[in-house]
Amino acid sequence: MAAPPQGKRASNGRCGDGEPHVLLVPYPAQGHLLPLLDLAALLAARGLAVTVVVTPGNAPLLAPLVAACPSVGVAALPFPFAPPLLPPGSGENTKDLPRHLFRPFMVSLAALRAPLFAWCNAQQRGRRVTAIVSDFFTGWTQPLAAELGVPHVTFSPSCALHLAMSHALWRHLPRRRRPDDAEEAVTFPEIPGSPSFPWRQLSGLFRQYVADDEVSESIRRFFLWNLDSACFVANSFAALEAPYVARPLPDLASKRVFAVGPLSDAVATSSDRGGKPAVAPASVAAWLDAFPDGSVVYVSFGTQHALSPPQAASVADALARSSAAFVWAVRPGTAVPDGFDAATASRGMVVRGWAPQVEILRHRAVGWFLTHCGWNSVLEAAAAGVAMLTWPMGADQFTDARLLAEAGVAVPVAEGADAVPDAARMAGAIAAAVGKEGEPVRERAVKLGKKAAAAVAEGGSSRRDLEELVEMLANRV
Image (cartoon, rainbow, N blue to C red):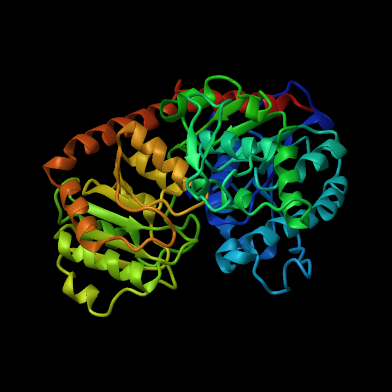
């Protein structure tokens, strides 16, 4: 991560013990952690003292941030394994967990509250924590902030629409009239446009809720605590989500939402953001240089979901049939069919492991992104002016896919974590996308990319929101 551009230096007009010191508490999942670290860089560049709380297993992920912003502090606290909720040795990041442990992991993390309170109280004069900014999965930090007597800000690594929907679900606890009907619609009347989604597309955290269950009730309490925050911060931008950030929403306790993204575009990111890449960015760029503008499809389904053998075979078959050039970033655990690499070597590159995604998307040859619609991936593509072929699988991804469809910058190709797409149909969609049929979508994506760039530039909507947030954090001491 290169050092972010310097902004206006924050000043509260005070001195001595009143210097602002912001404590950032990320949730240890790649899609949550990385944008909050980007925000940490932007706050530090504007003169705020910043400390990021992590457990030792996640501390290496902060190395690019600390290298670019040496003023950023790190508070490493032991991970609070809490049998029987979470067996010892389960891992300290969701990428290391089986899916059935995601919810217990989220609840176990709340045991950091006591040691974090002790850490805050142990800080010397002049370094007292004056505000806490935490991921929306760590709502337990809100009563911690109240105990310390400092403001709390909830950060959303998801879009503002999903942020509002998530809190609406935990506020109202809608129940199904037909428990066996996964298509039963749930409507959100207090959100602009009264969006409606089938039950199966709602947050899995919520769909697994069971009244009086310890894990379920703890998660609900985390979300309700978020509503007592001073405000919300979303990694989004007004041109994409105007209805959901233009005015306070009842489902967010009518609190202000600062839209400060795309954070990946606001910070000068590097290829080691999130991990050491399996292939050097320069090598990928040199390979991409051989292809015409917008002709290459980038393929990635994020860090959490490993395609099943039938799914991987379908994607491979579709890419082979499409005749399109591609770069496929393959997560560990995904089995690419034998012989695929060799058969497509003239027009395809398979990256096994962490890929330099931002650099790939920003290359002129890449025009399309076959994606699971994770919000970080969506914003990185939007900022690069790249159109998307969408395959939402869970979490906030169905919401993200709908936003993209409404913006006219995406084409759906599949849906659901267990779906095995028809290879011929997917191949047809890919071929159409890189051909003349896909040109209008690509043109709209390029325009959206320009709006994203304008949002984080001087005088842009996201830059203004960021500066207002900095002023708020600087003066709450």
